[in-house]
Every structure is written in C-alpha cells, then in structure tokens.
Length: 338
Ligand SMILES: NC(=O)c1ccc[n+]([C@@H]2O[C@H](COP(=O)([O-])OP(=O)(O)OC[C@H]3O[C@@H](n4cnc5c(N)ncnc54)[C@H](OP(=O)(O)O)[C@@H]3O)[C@@H](O)[C@H]2O)c1
Image 1: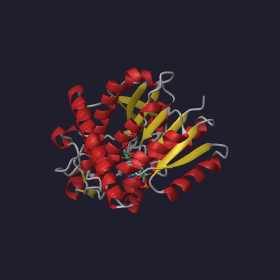
Image 2: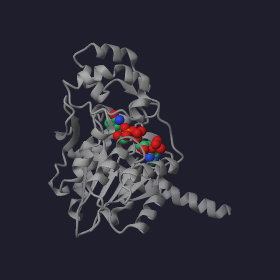
Image 3: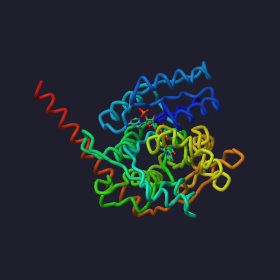
C-alpha cells in the first residue's frame, strides 16, 4: 500500500527539505504539499520533480491560520485520499521578531551563549495580531489551525488496519514560562511563538492519550537552529553570514546548530522510519548535527505534565466549538443577505 504524507508549510525551509528527503527514501510515496501560496507551492513541486520526475506530488491550498481554509482544505483532502499515514504539522510563523540587543550582547560574552542561540530564550519577542476569525495569529497558525486539521482528518488518521503519525515541528524555544492556561492564545504576553510551541508539546501528549486506542499517534521534534526564512526574519541574512564562522565554531561544542534545512529535517525524516507505537510520548526528538557534520536524532524528555496537557486539550475543544459556531453563523448571515 502506498503511504500518503501531508506536509504543511512544505514550500520552503525545513518542510521542503523534508519532502526532498522523503521522496529519496520512498519513491512510491503519495506526497501532498499543503501551502497558503499556490505559486510558491507549485515552484516547490517543480523543484521536487526535477530530482524525482516520477514522484506523485500534489498541492493543497491551506492557510492554516484561517479556519475556513482549514475546513475546506481538509474536505478537499478527504475527497482525494482515503488514508493518511503521516501528517507533518510544520507550518509556523514568528511575526516581527525583535531581538533584545542588550540581552543579546550580554549573552554573547556569557557562558549562556550556546543556550541563547539554541533556544532564543529571553532574547526574542514578537508582535502578534488578531485574525479575521478573532484568534491570535501565532496561536492560530502554529497551533489551533493544525489542531482543527487533525480533528477534520480524523477519519483518515484513525483507521483500524494501520497506525498513523501526526508530527509537530516544535522548538527548543518552547518554554513553560511563556505559556499560561489562563491565556492559551498568549494575548497578554510578548512571546507568542514560545507559548504556541510549548502548547504543541502539551497537545501532542494529549493527542496520544485520546487517540492511541484509535491508531493515531503524535510526536514532537525540534529541528535545531536552521537558516530559513524564519531565522532571516529575526536577523537579516547578511548578519547570519557574518557570524557564520562563529556558528561553525560553536557547533564543535553543541550539536543543536543544524544550520541547513536538510540537517534540520533529520528528526522529521527519522520519525518517518519509526513505528508510531514505539515512540515515547514524553520525548521531543531533536535533529542534531555533530562538529563533523554528521546528522542524528536524539530524544529529550519534555518539560510538560499530563494535567496541564489535558486542561489545554479541553480548552481547545471548547474553542473549536466556538469557532465552528461562529463560522456557521457567518454562513447564515451571508445566505440571508443574498
Ligand atoms: N528555522 C529554525 O531555526 C527553527 C527552529 C525551531 C523550529 N522551527 C519551526 O520549523 C517550522 C518550519 O519553519 P522554517 O524554519 O522552515 O521556516 P520557513 O522557511 O519560513 O517555513 C515556514 C513555512 O510555513 C508556511 N506558513 C507560514 N504561515 C502559514 C499559514 N498561515 N498557512 C500555511 N503555511 C504557512 C510558510 O509558507 P510561506 O512561504 O507562504 O510563508 C513556509 O512554507 C516552523 O514551524 C518553525 O517554527 C524552525
């Protein structure tokens, strides 16, 4: 049976590198690139077809920050496919990141330099905004839209004859201190990215608790520090190029500087080759690159607990009801006006 794989945020960076690696591993794969911009998606598809001319690569229009788009993309996917083996929840944003320059220069000459670069802890703040669905954009994109997608694709993910795997691209920047159950969308804070990634760690655990008996498993990865559009949003690419020799040096002491999208996709790719039921639901799987440039994957225990994970899950289900109702009401209004 040909495996079906859906990757969100597949047109660039780590997502695109993953697609390339998956096709090199399994030429029979049915790969679907879920992207918000169809021009960029088609360019990615063409690039993949250059190295894999026989590959089955389809496109799905999905703006994961827009709940109406999530519902229609899921519907379209269900019409095209009757199974889904791997769902990579990889799309993510860190809008208008600001570096605290004082903290940066202080950290640069401290013993915390590696951790600072590897996690961005205490270093980055972002400017969030509210989407037309009334949700915080970072929360909607990095977490809630993906949650709704999983819920919509349940019939394909939960099948009795095989197990499926849902994989979140999280981060080492997923900090407990940035997340609050009283403010799951992070309306009040200045670290929505960290909050959303911590929430994805919690949600992965909850998905395992609620869905393992139906054949759906979830896992979380950290790609390490990778040069992509996302990191070029933090500091301009010329700056990264300037400090690249330092980064290569630091790589001798830490293995989290994966730097290239190919290396960053290591844990995502590694998970593709594991049995979902063999994975540790409390572990985050890290892409690591040694000083000599060898890639490997290592599990690290996540700083999460069952109760908070369950409480978040319940809140997300409630929010799902609210959002669905709001969309239905909007539909009724539109019909009434026509
Ligand atoms: N780079 C790192 O060091 C690093 C570290 C830790 C975690 N991560 C995570 O890795 C994942 C991939 O990021 P990346 O580093 O590869 O950056 P990237 O090149 O910017 O890739 C992000 C992808 O997400 C897509 N995306 C963003 N918003 C979307 C939306 N509303 N709907 C659909 N797709 C959307 C982007 O599409 P467009 O091209 O249309 O914008 C792009 O394809 C993210 O979840 C990120 O948080 C990255």
